Image 1 (tube, rainbow, N blue to C red):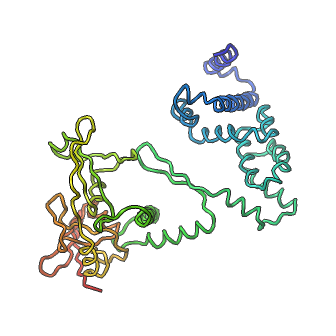
Image 2: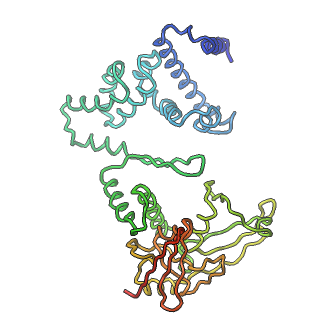
Image 3: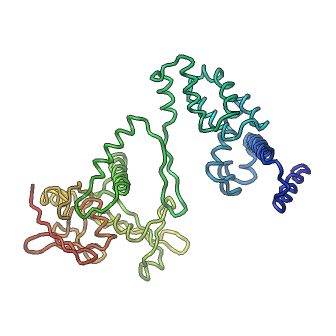
Length: 393
């Protein structure tokens, strides 16, 4: 470190030991803001020279998150300033002298970029001056007031451009493999998604105790699977998916244990979830050696044929085998599980909706089919009994 930076670090250490040395909190906050502006400037120079990639072998975003452990919000602010602040000289000068904060910078850039290019230079000075006396979150309303003062109709193309610029969806992966979904939808896309979620997320019946949020989550999965099924994802022999199972040799030679399974994208799913996905899938076993080399790849374990799937659908009138279920069917389930010797026969097939397929795999319910009257017989985890007789519609 340079002598100046060493002095700054030493001063911070002194303040940590004795915070009574801080007698003017306002000046301290201003100093932090100016240091943040310096960090942005240095990050820009490092990015232009590709220094982070050469030294650390990763992009600036990854370096900030993984090496410096900066929160995602702060990383996004730094990167936005890094790439865009030079285009707004008045904003840059204001933050470097601590007249405004980094939060103001991001709010101004976000507001200005929602405007047509010919208005940006006109409104930047007014935004900077207002930012000196307001909170960052108040700047969006100030832009509206400016547009009104300029005589621009709120329903004009500029407002539509702003709504369009605000659109976006972020899907972040968490540490446990789950994903967090946040975003802003345009009115038309939001209306279409709301209708789709309402249709796909209707309660499946009296036993469906999922909350509306949980039903919308499961419905979103159905919408995604439906899209993938019709856009490039192959359907082999009528199966809705193909599962290529890679099995380490020592696992194959011993026994499978209950645990967590890594997906190709790094996410983890439980063994129960894997069995549920594989229930209505075509299985291709791949045996791996100790070095993850492929020792053997088996033939596809044929599932229900297209004819069987159609026959089961017609036999039960396209309805779920669970009593009083009104949800659309999505999975052709093995009544006797494949791992228990269940065969791909019509008598061993039952169409289920997504929710009741989950019940039978992960919530303790069991399903049998009476060999005489062909009724579906369900038993819950607490001994509940349900029966359903289905006939061709």
